[in-house]
Image (tube, rainbow, N blue to C red; front, side):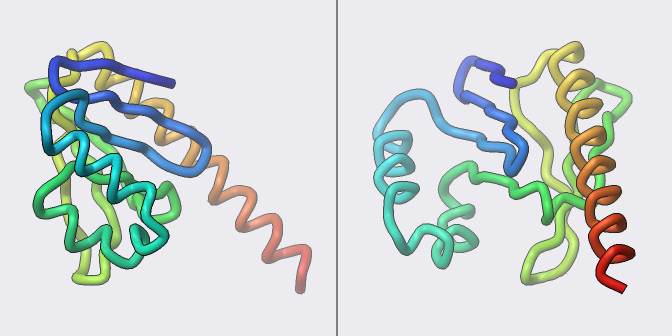
Amino acid sequence: MIFETKDFTIILTDEKLEVDLKRGARAFLEQLFEGSRFYKTLRWILAMAFPRDFFLDEILDVRLTNEGDLILRERTPFGVKDTRMPGLSRVQAELLAKTIKSLLEKSSIELFTRSSLSQ
């Protein structure tokens, strides 16, 4: 699933939610860093300057505000953090929230199935 906003390209795959800048110098630097083999180590520091990717196994919950904004609750090395997704229309936010919840539910069922089979 792909959404384009004024400033961002948002891509949802089975493993992660990517939020990428579309243009400008910061977008170029973001692409440069994401290609680096050190990106996984640096991604928490780089999140201060760039939008970042959210791996589904780190997302705890997703919800919509009354204004139609999408809020991701995620597990970080520093605790639990809520992040607002930028620039989505209400319809896009609802569709993205519904799809993420479905993926989270599917992954928890798979995890439960795998753990019960190994016992």
